[in-house]
Length: 315
Image (tube, rainbow, N blue to C red; front, side, top):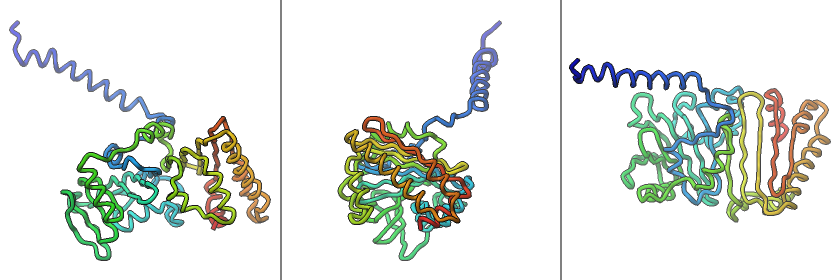
């Protein structure tokens, strides 16, 4: 039989391609992601993180909008970066917003976003606000005013922040000087994909410590955190609110002091719980805190029905 291109395709290449496609389809529909798989950060956002970032917050907006506590979180403005971005861009988080990363270097912060910025054409974002105007810098389109602006990296990726800092950030992007610190990439692996809200920090800088009151009970917190080298906090919002945290301290003594302080706070809250809010006792009793060497691990669980009451009490 004469071997020609058609025969080679039908009897050789085509069956091999079909087999590969079939194997891919089987894997896609039968191999489901595990709840313990690490959270994924959109690569388009990871490359925009300044390497000197001290605190990185991740908000999986698309997933959070589907959780039972989403409306309450919005009403109480507990997702402030999300609210700020929505208000200034006018986008609909349930339909148009996918993921946010918030960076803080001790002095300046940025909101990095993956979103569909316009329902009809992502290339023409429809963003309005007081004194907002379009201008270019570093080959990127900006929409903003002298105080704050949004710079568009591409049709679905944007950076929002203080305008002078944002200009410098775009200059660094063009020079190839941005990118998530390797330390954060490694520690990201400790956060399960089911936690739609999370935070990673390095040691407290003097600027970050300036946000903690230096008088009253909060001053004790500042002193305890002096020995913190790194931490991560993650929140599971799929049912009851589950908060988990871990911190690396400089010494074992500092780790044990943090654990003692957490247990003391839970005990104090228990003693001062009003009689008409006794169901909150299960929240305080759910606290788990332990020190292993210089590492501290803690967790807390809040039932959906308890969340509004707890927020009122904290307020």
